Every structure is written in structure tokens, then in C-alpha cells.
Length: 272
Image (cartoon, rainbow, N blue to C red; front, side, top):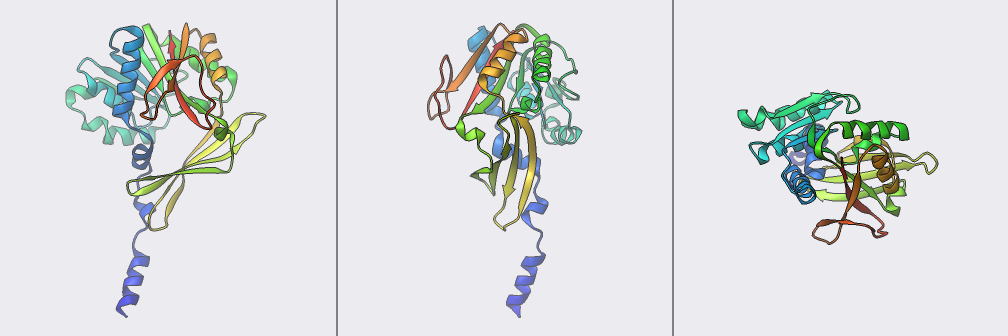
């Protein structure tokens, strides 16, 4: 009887997926704002010969990177812009509220559309995690890049990431990675080679067999590097450098030619 009671208790216990916070899981699996902002600051310093102080994080989600930027130096300020008020409020509670009062004054998390939400001109705008791929039409992506260009000050720079390789064009493909307390899954659900339409999911699985599937869904266009670079130049940027991963330690450097790896991630630094 005791064994049956224990089994019943296990059945009645809340499943791990039911109590999990998908935003916290995303940050644990995908983001490292400290490393990311160090990288952004380093690229700007190497390219412009001075330190950047004012940053705008487009598609900022929780605004973690914006908050991290402001903490790096007492003169640093940041704007974060995102359309999703739910994740912005989550970020205010998780990241912004934990800043010192003086640092909070140097961070603004704004509910708005990156296409038409102007802020003070900044040194750097960042659009990470391939978020700008939400713009599927060439004209719309060009409009966004032009808006970024207008929002940059003297010696301004736009930093964004991209990925590719022949594995990126596969559909019905799942990549798994074990994280602390859960398994992260990147699922490429479908890809249309005619339109470039691309649907991907992030899933989280737990040791009790439960899952959040999908936790996030992305309906993108899979843009290629030549397309992105051409659009940036058309939008008014004077130069676009591609920073490619050169070694297993994750170090990136500007290159003229990349390698035809099955899967790669790179960064683009577009100078105003």
C-alpha cells in the first residue's frame, strides 16, 4: 500500500513544465548579456578608437543587455525597445529593478515598434538573436535599417548577428543541448526555398518527461549574408564588416571571406 501511495503522490505532483518560467529558461539557454556587451564594447573600441557610452537594444525582450550595458560604466546609458509589453514588464522586475537607483535612471525600457520609435541618437544600436528576420519583405527590412541609420550619432555603429550554412536550410530538424535542469531544443520546423519563409521553435524538456513545446515560435525569413550587407549599404551605412568566428574559443575577427561550414554564426558591424 505504501508503494501505491507514493506512486499516487508522484502522479499528483506538479509537472516541472507547469511551474517553469519560459523567459528565465530562454535567458539561461540562449543569452549571456555580460559576455555579449563586452563583445559589443570591444568591437566599437577597436573600430572607432574610443569607448561607446550610449546604446540602443532593439527587439530587447527583457532588456537584460540594456541593463548590463548601463552597469558597465557610470557614464553608460541605454534604451531598450520591444513590442511585447509582457516580456518588458518581466524584465523590469527581473533586471531593471535589481539595478541601483542611479543605474536605473540610465536605462529606459520602451514599449514600441523599432520601425517608428525614435530615441536620442546613440553610439551603438544592437539587434541580436536574429530578431530582425521578422521583417520578411525587402522593403520593410530596408526601412528598418534606414531607421537604425537615422538614429545613430557621429561615429555610430549598428551591430547585428546572422547565421547560415547548409544545416540552416533544413526543415524538420532538431538540435538539442543539455542545460542546468532542462534540455534546450532548437527546432527548424519548415523552410520554403521560394519565399525564404522559415518557421522555428524553441522547446524546453524536463527530467520528469514534461515539456514546454513550443516555448517560443519564430516566423522569419532566412536572410543570407550578401542580402543583409547589400541592404545595409543601401540604407546609408558606409561600411559593413563581417566578424567571423576564427577558433574554438569563440574569438571573432573581421574577415573578407568565410568558410562553408555546415552551421555558422557571425556578427555584422555596420558603420554610419
